[in-house]
Each structure stands twice: as structure tokens, then as C-alpha cells.
Image 1 (tube, rainbow, N blue to C red):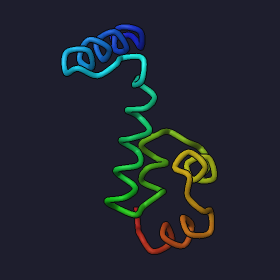
Image 2: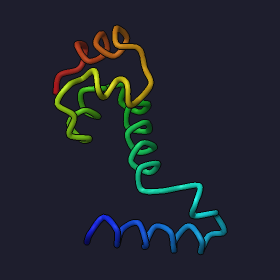
Image 3: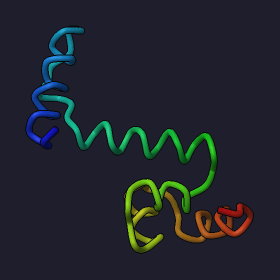
Length: 79
């Protein structure tokens, strides 16, 4: 499935449940999923791996959390 096909499918789903497809997209779903995983696990390293980021700093910025907090949490969890 191409990125464009996925975007069209998502747009159809959103319209089908009464949401405006212009307000949501594939990137907002990706960001929401990453945020939910981080909140449940407290593990920015796991989110980093799932998103394919090479630097933890990129993941921290993406999630909108503090670098020091994220690194402290990451050091407590073995992956």
C-alpha cells in the first residue's frame, strides 16, 4: 500500500465516522501512537526504535518532552 493510498483510506474512515478529514492525517496518527506508547511505557528509547529515529534527541523533540527527563527514564529501562 502506498502512502497516498493509506491517506485516502484514512480520509474515508474519518469521513465515515463524522470527522473532518482535513483536520486529521497520517502524520497526526503517527504522532498520537508515539505519544500513547511513551505515556504507557515511559520509554523514549522504545518510541525512538518504533519511529526509526537515529537520535534520541529527535524523538524527544517529536514527543515534546524534556531531554534530561527522557534520558533519565531511558536509562532506567533496558531495551
